[in-house]
Image 1 (cartoon, chains in turn brown, red, orange, purple):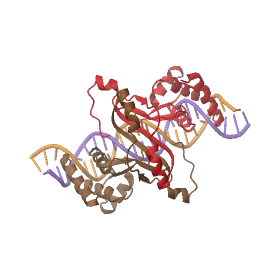
Image 2: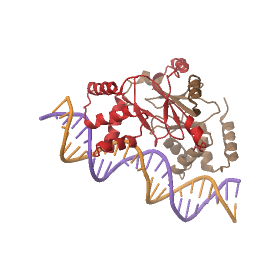
Image 3: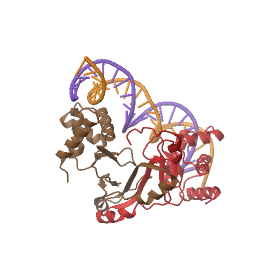
Image 4: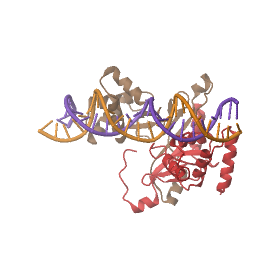
Length: 155
Length: 155
DNA sequence: ATCGGTGCAAACCATTTGCACGTTA
DNA sequence: TAACGTGCAAATGGTTTGCACCGAT
C-alpha cells in the first residue's frame, strides 16, 4: 500500500507537470481526498475543508474537482445518482466499485476484466473504445444485517 | 425479432398489471420509443410527440419516463452525461451499450457477461448485488472515418 | 508582471413540484 | 366517483459563470 505522503507528492508533481498551479486550496482538497477512507461527496469535501479554512468556497471545490479529474488524479463514483456522486483518489490501478443503495458507501472491486467479452464485438463493429464505466449497486453486509432493506425508488 | 406491435401490447398489459392507467399520452410516449431505431433524448421524445399532439407537455414526458422506467419498460442510456441521456425500449434481453462520443449514437452490445468475474468478490464481501451499469464510450466507425476525432473534455 | 485561481453573487437550466382540472377505471 | 394523470406555471437546487481581486510562477 502506497503511503498517503507519496500519493500527495506524486499528485503535486503531476499538477505541476500539467501546468496547473499549486494553490493552498487545491492542495487542501487533494489532501482531504487522499486522507479519506471513503469516497466523498462535494459537500463532504467542502465541509471537511471549511473546518480548517472557512473561507474556501464551494465553487472552488467544484472547479478543482473538475481540474483534478482532468488531471487523472481523482475519479468519480456512483454515477447512477447525481445527488450522491462521490470522489476518490485515483490510484494507478484501474478498478470499479460496488455501491450500497442503503448507506451509499462504495467498495472497490479488485480488477477490471469486464472488457474481454466485449473486445471482439468492438473490433467487429469497428468501434474504437476510449473509456468505460462499470458499477454494481446492491446492499453491503452491514446494511443487510442491520436494516430491513428499504424500498428503492426506481433504479 | 419481436415486431413492434407485440412490444406495445406487452407494454400496455404490463402497465395495467402494475396498476398504472392507460392514458393517450403514456401510450404515445411508449409508441414513440418503441418505433424509434435509436435511443431518444427527453427533448427528442417531446418533439416527436408534439407533431401529432401539440398539447403534450414536457412534464408529462418526464413523469412518464420515470413511470415507465419503474415499470421496467424503458431503460436509460448514456449515464455519463446528463445532457445527452437517452431512453430506449427495454426488451427482456439484458444488455449494455457502446456510446459514440462524437455523434452520441448508442450501439447495443450482445450480452452481459461482465458479472462473472465479480460474482466471487461479491460473495466474499457478502455484498448483495441488485443491479449494475456498464457502458463503453468511444468512437463509432462512421465518426472515425468522417471527422477528426474531437478533443474531449475530461472523461 | 503575467495570467491562472479564488470568492462572491448572480445566472442557468434541466428537472421537479403545487395546484386545479380532466380522465381512467 | 375516487384516484390518478395532465397542463400550466412557479419553484428548486446543484452546478456554472462573470467579474474583480489575489497570488503563484
